[in-house]
Image (cartoon, one colour):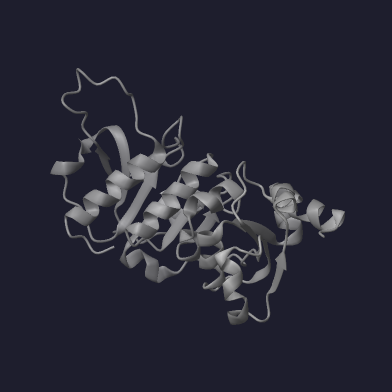
Length: 257
């Protein structure tokens, strides 16, 4: 039986201040936990229903404590509305320096993305399209938020997310590196030449790209409405949808990411 202190500790990791204080975060569900077990992340403990397929892997990870729990206990420690078989306590990795070599491909830059689900979906989308590095404004949502971790479906183990002062970061990129941004007054992306490397800026869900980042955009693009601008009702695209469309167009051109 789990102690009250253990339950309190795990549920406290829902909040960023405790994730930072304990240097831990939570991953949930068989697929997500398996991804972290097989990654470079340090999994400190796995708690779940004994019949979960994750427990069949315990012999492969003798240094990790696998703790069987009841359905009632799982309900108490899960940070999801619908608990999913297994919960893992994972160590937060140390923040690493942004590698200069990343500029040889495409880098995503997220300008104050606040929604945990959007952040997770963007990371998952980046993984799908072979993006290895994302740079976030410091006041963006924490990627180790439980909703974000869940939405990545394990892609967080392959995509490195960096937090930085975006203005300082953009001031120090190579002079010839293009910076793409989706803006209403940009050029039709389907008619615009796209480079094999560069930075793609994704703006905040409600405000778009901020005024402090706008001056660094060197190639403004937009996605035309269909069937025509006159008939379109939506003013903008969801941040994660815009990310998927941009990356898909780079891929469609055969651009190396």
